[in-house]
Length: 61
Image 1 (cartoon, rainbow, N blue to C red):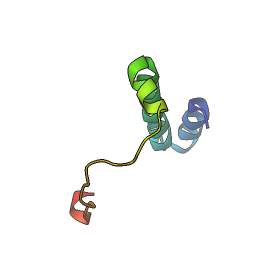
Image 2: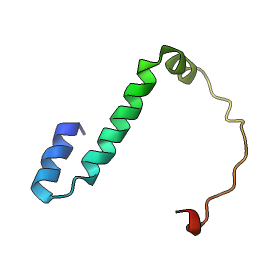
Image 3: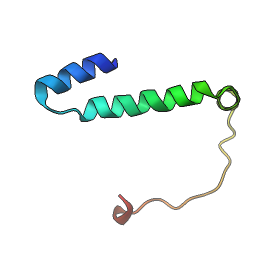
Image 4: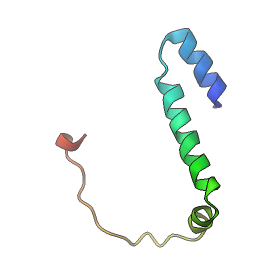
């Protein structure tokens, strides 16, 4: 869905949360593509090997 559709739906319903989420996702994508080095790194295969982190608990949500 594009941002305009989310914004129009939010104006009709009073719920702008979907628009806000779409805007945040769009901004994150734009930031990655703006940095050629980061974009190139993200296009390479990812091994999936990294630091093991603990599963979040309900207290962290």
